[in-house]
Image 1 (cartoon, rainbow, N blue to C red):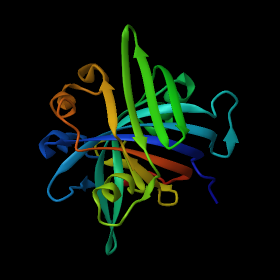
Image 2: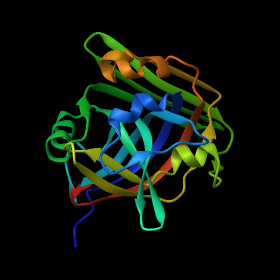
Image 3: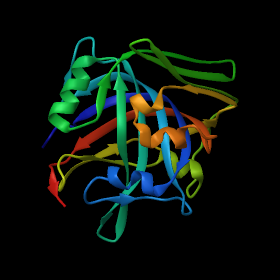
Image 4: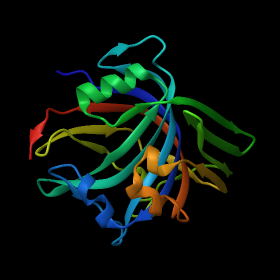
Length: 239
C-alpha cells in the first residue's frame, strides 16, 4: 500500500475569492476535468495558510516541516461513475522553502515558486488575524484578514461549502496527462472576515490573465480553522 503523498496540519486558511470570466480559465483547466461553476459563476481564490508537522511520503524532513503557503486556485470537477469529484486546480503556489518548490515542480509538475515569506497568525480573545507576507526582489506583497467571534460550521449547498469543500486536486502534466490526488480532512469551520488586505503585482506573480479579476471587489473573504490533512497520490492517468 502506498504511503500518503503528504500529511500535515493545515491551519488558518485565509481565502479571498474573486469572480472571474470562465473564458479566462479555459486554457488552465487540466485534461480530463471541467470547470466547476457556482450558479453559473466562475471563481478564483487566493489562499494563504500554515503547514505544521509536514511529512512527505512518510518521511519528516528537518527544517521543512513548518512553513507558509500562498496560492491562486480555481474550481474544477471530474466525473467518477454517477458522481462528481469536486477539485482544485492551481495557477501558482508560493512557499518559503526552495527544496519543497523544486521537488514539487520536478516530480509532480506543481506550479511552485520559492519566495521569502512570513506568516503572522493570532487567535485570542475572540479575534483571529491571519497575515501572509512574501517578497520577490523589491516587491513586498501581502494577503491578510481579520475576523471576530466564534467559527461556524460549513453548511451544505452554501457558498462557503463551494469554496472550502473541494477534496481533489488536479495538475496538468502534459497535453493529455493529469495528476489526480485526494485531499482528506474533516469539514472545517470558518469565520467571515471583517476586513482584508491584498497587495501584489498580480501580472508578474500570477499572470496577466488574472489582473482584471483580482483587481475587483472580492466575492467573499473567509478564514477556515483547518485541521490534519492527508493527501493521497494517484498514478498519472491518460484522459
